[in-house]
Image 1 (cartoon, rainbow, N blue to C red):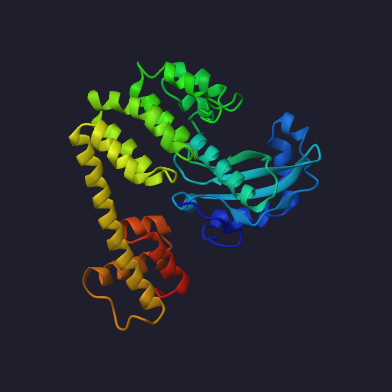
Image 2: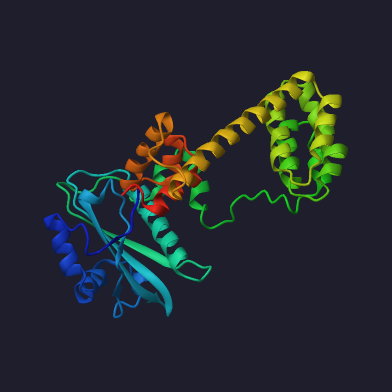
Length: 337
């Protein structure tokens, strides 16, 4: 788990104390940066105006043998950042390029959340390494990509647009042309494209049913059941009674039975979660006296311990088998403290 810690926190190692104390001084940082930054960066960056930022972006796994400082500056009068990472582990880490890109992405995400702009600034890294022997691994992320034939693709990865399947601009007729030879994939795209349509019922009866019947007749019944239930559960403009009638009349009884079974199971699960949520809300509001008994009590105690340890809510909800809303209420009311 990656945390943003203040530069004044967690300075335990002698290396950390030395680096934090000296490099926190912009003049000291400037002396090192001016000597070792590439010429093209020096031509753009204003080293006379370095502003040390408060946050650290190293993940907990590597915090014991790494320390970082982020300096805000300008690149040709536009906001930019120079990120200094000191690696003081004694052995070479071949995964250093991956971690560098990971940390830069974390910094960008942090800036995205704290800034109103829709652009991201340049974050240029410089690593200070003092291992027991010279660093012997590649510092180029491309060299780590396998197979080697794909490295050229990766080289253009950040220079060319990503592959985007934009269903809002793909015509239905274009999808239909590929339906026969790509039935499962196209049926899925058609379902996703129209799930929130106000005319979903008409589209379902006139178009999707035809595609779904092909799936029903092939060996793709599990995929079909998943798509049918998705429509039933998420299609707010779908006539549920009409849906079940068509399912009964047009599809294999086994398909209809599977969809009904899933719907019944999830409905029962929803009722159970509603009961748990109601009990928890009653406890929080003073309507439930004493402790919850049995499994529910054990689940709540388990969730409280994980909350106290700073575990993410979604992870707690999954492990404790409790609704995430209940976990959030536990956190909000601080009953785990």
